[in-house]
Image 1: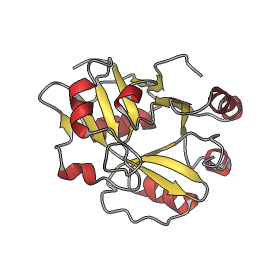
Image 2: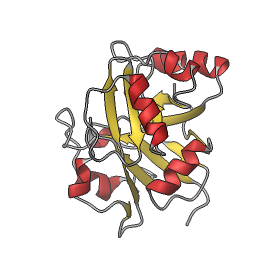
Image 3: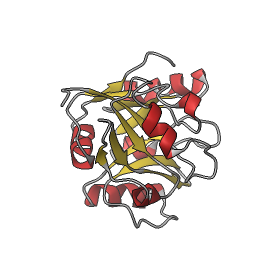
Image 4: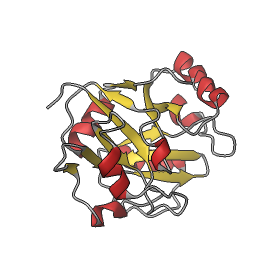
Length: 201
């Protein structure tokens, strides 16, 4: 197993109504895009678990299940025991629950117009990992995240926010630890062993 891994942490399948990227396309093409792993983060659901087993696949790709959870104070990528999580929590309730259950959250595209993350989430220490680079953001939205990294002690991630095969792996993360499954992944993120694997803004 590699000591560090290149992973796309923000990928939507056709389980998300807005995505045309199939699970089969992800499995067949992730390695071609230079990825060692992929996090499936469909909107408000982890139903991907009904279609594939989590962990290391037959072709060596590491697949982690998560979700992108929408709140009035922004969207968060969640990883943990949240298969039956209902929608409708506000950000403070959500992030406290994630911590209580031993999971981890990433503030997704925090400065995207119309889907921005409220600053209290990082100011109050409720969310310590922030998507520094999002593949669907405009450059200025990615650049604005630097304001938070100047003010707060945060770990930075990258994610393609892929909704199509062309977007898969566009802005991945480097995980500075070997990852075989969800527990390893959560532990690495909590320890801050993550960085964007691209210099794009």
